[in-house]
Image 1: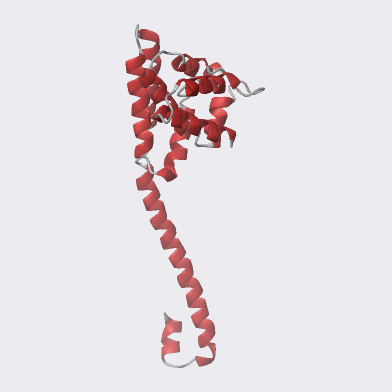
Image 2 (image 1 turned 90 degrees about the vertical axis):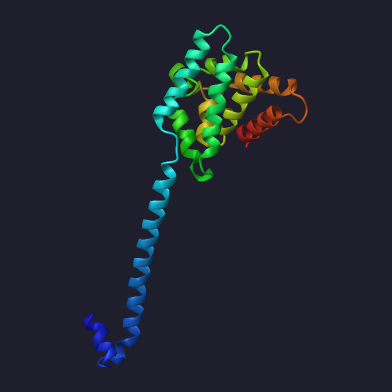
Length: 194
């Protein structure tokens, strides 16, 4: 402040350009700090939109218990899978990677805990068009990241899981041309092979 008063009174006109440059630098630093704080505030608000781990674990538990407990679990499983898909669509695109990470963290398809794709394969083998649509939609979300591709295709770390890909291709062949499920599976194939 004192320096500004001296400049105003003309006491140090020879250092005026230098002083202005220093103030520009300081203002630039303050501006960056403010932008970072605003960005952090925005991100914390957006991050709060992510689905909580508890909700995802509840979905996983419903998925597992529906498959294990019910005589005809297709409708219940489809409902859980579609709910997960809706949650994914409600998250801003810049945070979907975090959502996929959350799904992997809770091991939504029991791939990491069993070191196999048996659970997801059992879902894909069920005879329900709606279920195949719902699971292909969620798989499409998961494989939208490299971490998700690895999760679904590397159940055995020594060799990629070709059985899952082969099953998806078989489902693709059974779909009507242009169906939404067919488009999901094509998108999965594109993401996995990219």
